[in-house]
Length: 362
Image 1 (tube, rainbow, N blue to C red):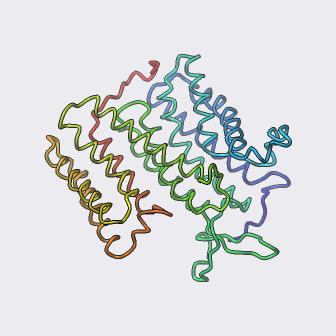
Image 2: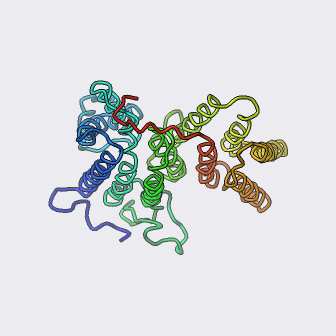
Image 3: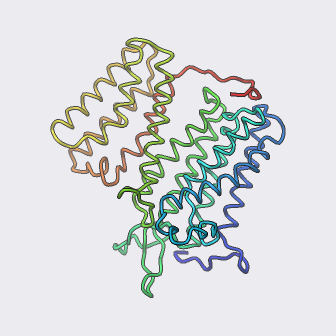
């Protein structure tokens, strides 16, 4: 299993294409089911797929070309040779979303509702499609030197200089994360507070997982010395959190906004603060401020207080045991995993504002 038997299912039909098409078909079926549930016009999902798939492919290619322009500058016509490989997931998301947005403006459909019914199926399609990387023997991580860890699916074997070398199976980690995101979105789809929120949760949860896994990949796209997908992921997560925070601030005034603001700062500032005396002191102050402001708020969230206490305990344990590297650069392992609960704290303080008239343009 650590070495795929072939890149192709039958003849010249690649596994990658089969898995991608299968993922899109499953996403279409799930979206059609959700289309009926929220009352969208019939065939809304079909129309959206017909728009999103080609615009997503174009976006994926243009994103990749923009990040690797030196590869195409001498022969620009090769930009069209998409069958030779070279696409990027974030490009497909941007391109697909832009195509759907223009479609919604033209057909007077709810963009937010369409993106919501797409989100669960989209991330499930990504979980399935990642196995295409397994058959292509790509998207892998660093070399595994410990023989105890040289097993599938923790690692895969990649041909290098005539030998099979064990590498971290990052495709598998991301596939499992995406499957977990699908389960989370599917379970919360009936309880979101506003149209479009399910897609925002998709972007945030997918972004957290991609931020973690991207740090292990050996084939990342770089811009100015930075892993592009890693920092795009982080910016997306921050943007989603900022949307939740801004919505809360618009609906509240004065001291009531302190808990949300302190939680937002705690979630994103603490991983970046150096493990110096000043950095630790500021982090502890953020924890205490968040706990006090949550406790004093009129509607006490037991979950919010419990999570901040648990996070504080974990922070102290990691710090005292000398495992601060799990928290900070280069891997931000725990920091990335702990951001979604803070998003839940922010989101939980927002009032329900679902408009059941899904057909209305938003």
